[in-house]
Image (tube, rainbow over all chains, first blue to last red; front, side, top):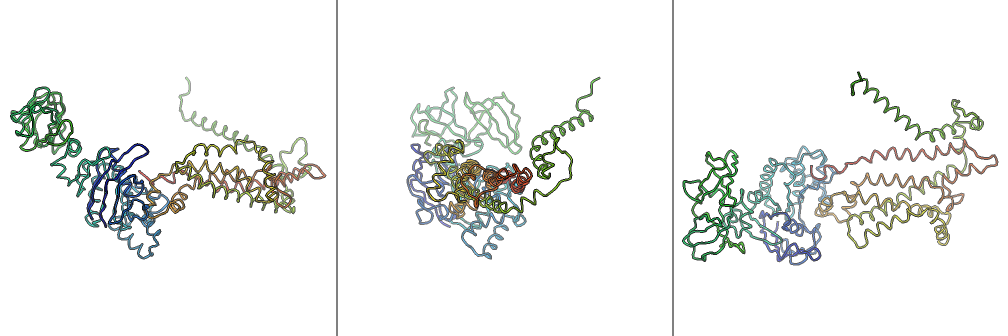
Length: 351
Length: 282
């Protein structure tokens, strides 16, 4: 086990720079999720930590060792790929012991490690099967088993659940988290799914366009997003963001002239353009408030999502109570106390 | 009323017609082989019978003659050595080359890849004479090695072209996974890539073997009596005092064909595609 330090790391393909100086510190035993939309550079960063991509600039350390010029095989890491990358001509057992055989581990030790990993992952009955005889979830487990037997310094996961169906994904999410709690190995996990990030991470690193937007614990990021991007990316359904300008006296007004309630802030100037953010679950339907016209009502059972328009801007409301709302109705929304986020319209930074 | 399309009788008729057509097709393709087989089982007199004999009591005297000739076993062994060497050499050199073409984006890659084919575009006779001169200067003329090298120039591009496709189709993640597991690029190549590319190797080696096994022209020029291969030896059936020895020629022809047929028959079992299925995704 080891901590991983990423210091001002850059990656360029020819003239195109895809990572613009990224720094982060992953503590020993921590479960860190790199999350962001596709093309944000999260997988590239992971592959640089693995040694599968060269590092254009900056320093990557695993433990105290600078690994910039060290080959993947010498980094003592294990990686689970999105498509599992199981060796098709080897049995489950051979897949898991490939690394040990290369290291020249003794037969007894190899058998012991395989037994342990197979027990942890429930693969004991499948050891003689070939990958093509396994289901998606089983393959995923074998890929993890291959990582476990190594007893590496760091586990790297590259979107490991993307190929599984929704139900299995939830189940594997729990298994991976449980595995981490049992083994305590430093883990770096890449996903584009913010729910995976929220549910699994000790620490989330939100990335966009080759830069880190915010680093923090899941709830910190949820409660205090640093900017519009993080606010909209983390949380499901995502935060409502309304363009408006400050009109003083604790109010903001949209272009359509609809007033949005605010706590008076000295930091704002009259007529300053801001983005008014409020999470769907922080809006309640009341007798008075922000008028909204209902477009679509989506009941999910435990909660209901109401998609509506405030003026010409979209709003989502999440309510837990059953209520009779129909498309075309006008409802009035009240944000809960202290649930409003204001962002600068130009920079997107939270005010 | 017309017969309803798809009635059981129609379908039976359809199946029958398909079988008739297939049988005719197979007869057309196999006719030369069957004719050679027929000739090889006839006595000298029967061969020249006019009109041709379609029914006769087969004889194996031609096979006995051929197999007891002093030069047949020697030529057979020569062919075996030369062909397998050419195939192995082509695979050993061609597979790593194909891997490089598939995985490393070096400068001039597409040009080089195309340039490999030029050798195959030239009529063989165009390279035969220069080759003979070169081998003579090197002191290799009339050795088996010269024939092996000549065949390799032809089969190597074939191997590279076939294997490149196979290597490109294998997911890079499998190799990356192996590197992370502690394998060097070479170990990953030998332990992961090569076993998975087996169908490609089989296809390539069948084609190379046939090229080498059946070649007459290169062997005729580059060998002598001691190193001559089967096709060259077979030509001598035409050189006797008594004219063309049809029985001997056809019998040895059948014997020459047999090993390739057997090899291809067993090898095709390994051609099964989809070996890599299950490696990635569902």
